[in-house]
Length: 219
Image (cartoon, rainbow, N blue to C red; front, side, top):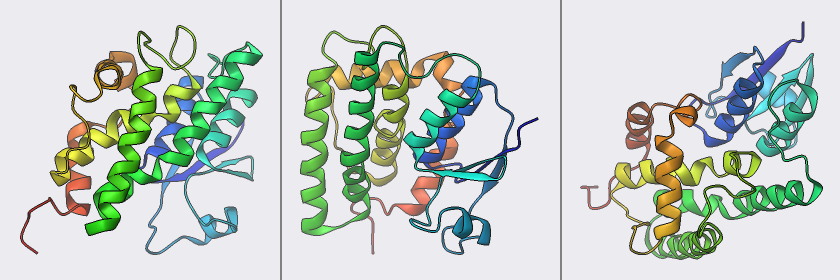
């Protein structure tokens, strides 16, 4: 029996990607919630370079970085495939996963920063989402005809972005501005199959409200 542990945060989209892959494959695992203000010796030992979550520990061996972990899970465990079998489709899926890894941090800056830095981040997010909106024209998924690796990598854009908008009062997306993205997002978060793998929206909203000061709130 393989021993699988996941060091993460329940409200982190990065941890969620890994949990999604584990659950999809039917892998039993122990989730070890972390405190990033007081990082555990296990986290520091398992990810000494970045000291970040998530970390998957499989039979005592740590693997870091969410999309790297998802690929590892896909290659290591039996179950439904996460990456496409076709080499071209697999390359495209990795391209979009990398795109979200590179562009995604601007989403957080849009809500947690203030002033000029926040406005710059909001512009970055809008430019990113325009690219995504164009890609999703007449498409339900990023690659092929079924949900997969690239869609899991886009989980923050699908759920966390909208929850952060509600928590902060900062609006980045409207259906008039980004109709294809919004249609994809609505299908993503309302799909009964996906809901099994995503955190409950109300719980996520309560957590993020506590972390984000609403726009216009008294200081």
